[in-house]
Image 1: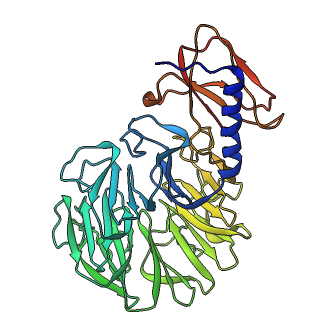
Image 2: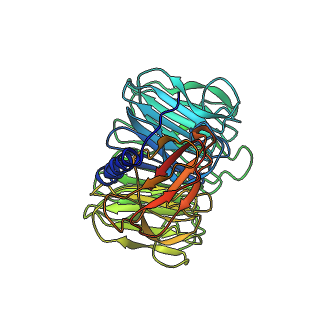
Image 3: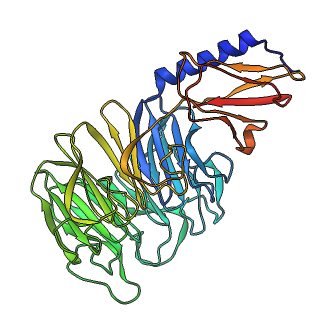
Length: 439
């Protein structure tokens, strides 16, 4: 049975929705970047996504790309990881969930079928997740390391070069942190030792060798640093890590200056890039990001898509400061970068061809821009005949976008008005049942 709403009721509903938008827009707590999509969490435990969705990696039930953040899970999410074209997340009960590309079994569901909705892979006991190009890693509460997916270069570390579509245990205990690179993997143990396996053509494992013949790497974990390592990050063909003294170290490919050592030379041994004060790291395809203890954001490497956020498209082989203070969390996708500030605001720069920055456009940005994050902005309104629908913002001149669809499942939102402040808008020929959302 349809419900008829009068103009006053509709206006009140829209005003309430806009008030919710105003009060809850910036509570972002974590962020992750994939090939051309992005994930983030809000303080209420909700999972949000934007960008490329051709394999269902956004998990919204469609294969439709979106350039605006959309809510995927309403609550209870505690961790996220974005792979090449797949996504992983954890819930408060320790369950592991996955969606997207699965041709190599990287979702770990026992199939090689893609999925556009989250599916549970492990029911409990998972504490950390990481995604490589087409392989996935996770930790359990007992410190065991598990992996699934592509393994042609030994990146799962199971002693074979065989892909697997079910999780298999790699290390039985004492693992504390994990990171996935393009075709290689890194992990830390409780004693602060750094271990690596997989592709090593460019020296990204840091073991003093270059694996220049097939299978181009090692299929067993090998110790790279004996102690003192506190954080790790894997890029396409390079690796970063932090030590307990706040120093930043790097190894692997350096063609775009992504190691930040002032050269374009590859290295197969860890080299110190920054002596102290570094608190967080992130590795993209050919660029790198790090934070310092003063909250400043630094970047180096490829910048052809503006991913360094310095206002140019010029690569640099030395770290340069991008934001002076108040940055708390960083993430690097293929050619885009994301970060959070201490006020919970989300910022992005770089390639945006699939809408992975979530700014409502598909335009590249070479300077950081704030991504406005709204709560789920949909209202269903049933209309008889040509009864007009009137929308009023909470204050005259408020800047927002009004969109409409007749089918929420289709993902086909049409912009009714956009980009200019207005005091109200009237729609006189809406379909019999329409859903509206405001940004």
